[in-house]
Image (cartoon, rainbow, N blue to C red; front, top):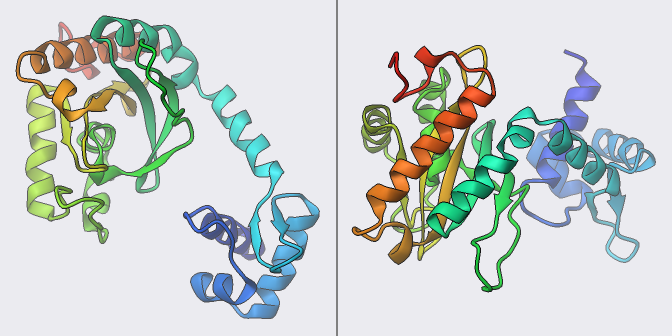
Length: 257
């Protein structure tokens, strides 16, 4: 690995971790490097427009080139491209919002978001990064990801009082996903919100991501609707997996499963 590239990538990850702007000292402490080294890397990243410096505070933030890279990533995602029609159809079927996500490190990245088909004001969540353990998308993916043990060994912080963070609790949750074919999130990422997700598989049989119905807990987990939503999510995930070329044996609920 090229050390300078690795260090620059660490700086970009720190700046993208949630704090809008950071000073050189703060960045140096978080990446474990000397301030002169960090300053030199930041100057290079700024010249490439990957970071920008606030003229008033001197602090740094991600630059416009990062957005261009992010958009290029979305445009190049086969999972996202193949999911457009399936996600729209699912949203119409259950009358709720639909997310398509994939795992990046320990977080789920929302690649596509179809709004709930009504007139309620909604916020586009494409690009949102959610800790895997706090969302249905993450559970659906982690249940079939060979890195499951590594994910469970991380220090997992609660996002709400209902977030499951214990290894035993999460292992049981992932086993339940494998048994029934879908994951359920009940206010673990945000109070009042819930989700039902199922895994999506790629042509080599590995898990590519997941599809989820998300929305208010009283709607998504309504006992009168929950099983219908779960069925719709599973059927959509199965259809999307086959569209991606996944072998039938790799798709839960498929003829060979």
